[in-house]
Structure formats: structure tokens, C-alpha cells
Amino acid sequence: MKRVVTAAVLIPLVLLLVFLGPRWQWLFTLAVATVAALAGWEFMGLAEKGGANPPRAAVLVALLALFAVNFQWPDRTAAIFGILSLGLLVYCTFLRPVEQVMADAATSIFCLLYVGFTLIAVVSLHEEANGPSLVAFLLCVVWAGDSVALYVGRAWGRHKLAPTLSPKKTWEGSMGSLAGSLLMAGGLIGLAELLTQWDSAVLSYPGDIWYWLGLAVVVNVAAQVGDLAESALKRSSGVKDSGSLIPGHGGVLDRIDALLLAAPVLWYAQVIHQSF
Image (cartoon, rainbow, N blue to C red; front, side, top):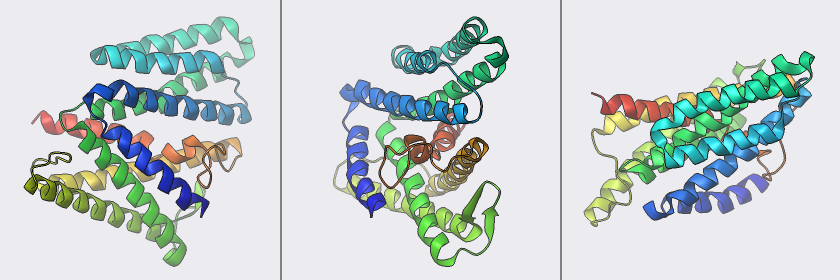
């Protein structure tokens, strides 16, 4: 029940942010940056349980700087990511105990990549011509897949998907997740066509329907891999949840783990599609 109530409160708020309009792009970017900072904080907590001791303040500054630069100069994001990564390496080299430099530097730079550079893709998607539609597609396809997987897995799950990483996940739940994402994608496309008939361009999914259904499959697979990747990180640190900030969902990192792979996959798929 906590999970359902939390989702009922947060989902409308998130979608409101997505569809506020271009003048509020700064607020959307700030919201994503805040989520990245919270997830980064939780990730560093996992790292500490695994034996590392990353400089939390320095990593958070680097995370927020990455989003600030992307907002102002989006074409320089990759270069700034490299500069910030090198900056964290230098910081750890001179300001951490020498026996901790390897673990702290690696953890710090990976945190910047894992919860920073990946979530930049959400902001980049939102800045596209049909950006809100793309972000809504990403979120709804991932959410639908996650929700259907939970209930199908509980009801009919028999065959373990990756028992060493996440013992509760099953192949039946995984297939249910894929079906849920496809149904959601089809629903969004149908809703977009219906709104077009009413002279509304709130949702826009141009092109062939098979492209978007194929994209839903790719995003779903990436989301499931992202979920398993975070499970592996938690298991390597000996914890069940990354935090307890979101009732019924664990921590922020637990809630966005699927997006950390699904968002860049959708972004790069769009870039490749637009190049041909």
C-alpha cells in the first residue's frame, strides 16, 4: 500500500514537471539534478559499506556542476565530464589517504558517470522538439514494465532470472515487464493520435508505429539490466536497499536504477535514428 500511495503522489508531480513548457526547462533540469545528487549520496553510502570512502562534498559539487554546464552549454557536456573526472582524480590523489586513493577515486568518478552523466540524457531528451513526449515515453514505459513485472512475478514467477543478483526476479516477471512496456507504448501512441484529432500536440510520436514499439522493447531491456546492475552493486556492499527516503520504494537510487540505463539508451537510439 505504501508503494501504491507513494506512486499515486509522485507520478502526477513528475509528469507535471515534464509538461510545464520550455520556459520551465531550468526547473526540470534542477529537479533532475536534485534526483542525481540524492542518488549520488546514496551510492556513496553503498561504496562506504563496500570499503571505499569517496569525498562526498566534492562528488556532489561535480554532479551539480555537470548539470549546470549541460544547461548552459549542452554541446560541451562530454568535455566537462572529462574535466570533472580528472578533477576528482586529482582531489583524491592529494587529499585522501594514499592507501584509499584507488578505491576513492574510482568510486567518485564512477558515481559521476553512473548517476550524473546517465541522467543528463533525461535533460537532453526533454530539450528535443517533442521532448516532453519523449520523456513521458521513457518514464511510462519503464514504470509500466516495472509494475507489471512485480505482479506477474509474484503470481506466476517460477524460473529465476538472475538468482545471484536478484533472487526474486523471474523470467515470467521479465516477460510480463516487456509486455507491460509494449502495451504502454501502444497506449501512448494511440493517445497521441487521439489528441491530434482534437488539435492538441501535447503528445507527439512521429513516424512508424513499429519504430516506437521497437524502441519500447529496447528501453525495457535496458531498464531491466539497469535494475539488475543496481542489485549487483547493493549485493556487493551487503545491503538490501540504497536508502529509505521513498516510502515503499526504498531509496532514490532504488527508484531510478532502471532509468540510469534506459535514459541514455533512448537518447542514443534517437540520435542514431535521426542520423539516417
